[in-house]
Image 1 (cartoon, rainbow, N blue to C red):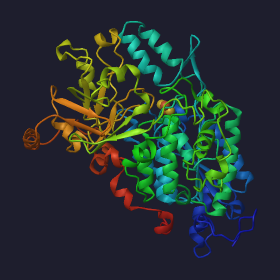
Image 2 (image 1 turned 180 degrees about the vertical axis):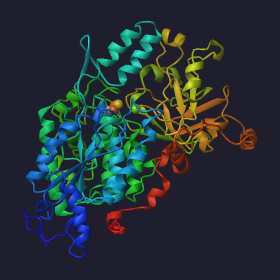
Image 3 (image 1 turned 90 degrees about the vertical axis):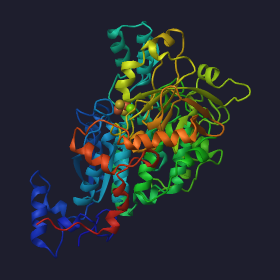
Image 4 (image 1 turned 60 degrees about the vertical axis):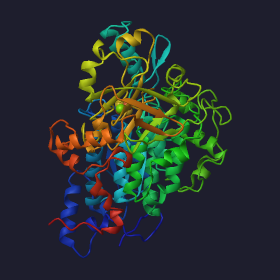
Length: 602
Ligand code: FES
Ligand code: MG
């Protein structure tokens, strides 16, 4: 049998079961001929070179990841130089701001499609082209399930946005522009101009939204080459990183370095800590739970508080801070953040990375290069900046990003000297965003500065796909009085680019029988951050009665399925607390090792 020619190993590659199988010469011919029809030669395909997939997420439908179409050329050159053969293929597009009803619906669809591709085709390793919010978890989840050598390559953030001398950041500017519009300070044309200024180049959101968060965490998990996550998309360094990534995956195949060797429990704990330090998105717990479960690891939601809450906020990026992606890169990116945490003994240094050395070896000696953008550990932007995990009689769990609690919010809701971390308010309940938009400015609702807005019907089943609709702006008349945020609670998600301290990801959702379904406008709610509780102040007997009535009524109503996928996913999807995965898929672990090869196709 032929070998990897560069290092002379005798390892038999999985792709050789297709292209070089002496026990089945006619099938070998069938497999070979079609991959030769665009110019690959029999000699190459039987040379024992690793066949490396490039899982391409970029397309015109996915502008955030579109630059991967360019980067893939450099990835291919790296693969070829290291002795591999590149095979590029498309991944189901997921674009956060273009896909309706929500890109959240498609993460598991892309996951499932990629599992089939990685398992069912002659691939020895794969480059995961990550970027826009859900592309990163979808690809890491699939790599986890199949468990062939895999390396992620971030497409990189856009350049900084500017408007009249001020940095304008993706998404974050929208929430701001909505307030300016509601206050009558800009018109619709001004709205578009302001928002478009935040997107000046190829790349993903330049704020610390879900994209920068998940790309940073993919690096913190060890799945990207050190320093890869933060390089802006148009920089030449990004091209160089694409080439290095292509080179490295070939050696990873030779070393048989797999996702399960890298994404260990230690790696996830590191990622939780890094998430706090970067001021990461509230979508991170959902996606990390999903990746962990597909690796067979437990990552209970409580660990976000136990490992993450006490970590300070170091990265000064919008929405929690001031700066944007280019600044993050210049300040040292993820390795600088990891290095700051290592300096305090907060990183499990033995966790392995795709580079083949530990995270302690890659980043232990690094520190911030710009203490304004990445603060040194001793001088953080905020102490104890991680998530709180909340429980109570409304839901089993929900999370709250404390790093974005503003002074204004604190003074209004959390200023009672006898009870400084708790507040009570009247619930104003909305069933989905249409209901909210139709009624928020209705004077009859009589919303006051101490009310709590509640969004339900926005979870994985109810929406479907769990939409980012929980952060709700106050009514226009309150904004005009200078009220920028009301407390919000919901069973949906919130955009990572939003600076609202909402209580999110409530599980179980109303549509899955959670008590949010029986909450009524006018009920009193109590939020106690010290106790970690959110409760409706409704007598237990009354709660029981309402539950019986809801059941008799057929349960919480949500919109009908509009596509086959909506129906299929609703039947098997779990809740946000446990990653909103396709529950039956969790039974399939490390299938490249546990399921053998797929059968021949003819
Ligand atoms: Fe795609 Fe933000 S919308 S990265
Ligand atoms: Mg979003």
